[in-house]
Amino acid sequence: MSEQALVNSTLTSWKSIIERADKLFSNLTEEQLQKEVAPGKNRLIYLWGHLTAVHDRMLPLLGLGERVHPELDAPFLSNPDRATQMPSVAEVKKDWEEVNSKLLAGFESLSGTQWLQKHASVSEEDFAKDPSRNRFAILLSRMNHISFHLGQTALISK
Image (cartoon, rainbow, N blue to C red; front, side, top):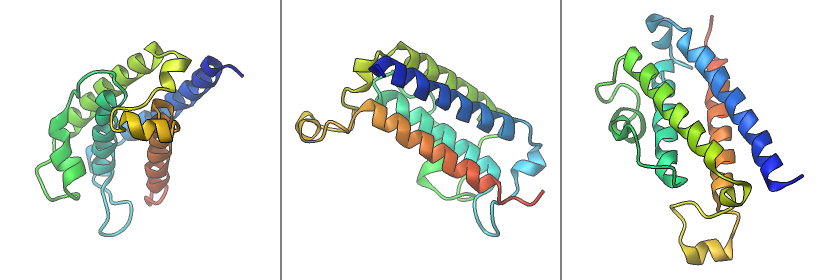
């Protein structure tokens, strides 16, 4: 399989995971988004915002541009759920759509060879020692990340 075919297959999986997450989160009411995945644990709205913030950080990490919503770090990355003021459900939904749209456009602009180049948080020296620290590895890692959190949502009692 060529590099590009492998990338295309992986991007198809990325789209599927994003669509699954979008279908889950976007169809929940504000009340349902307040449910915790387990007693005393993160609420669904927090997971949605957390994923949005992580995806936003992928833009500069993969060399696809500047972050769109760095303001999401405080409520969804730097602090636990309920520690700070959180954006509204409508804002999280809008940010989710905007970030993932920009990411996908960036993903689709990269060639197979470009996916195998280093990501922004690894030095040239470290990349020379371990070329698996590339853009493609970040994509795979983030696919695992979103799948993990989607799995958590199965714990919610209906």
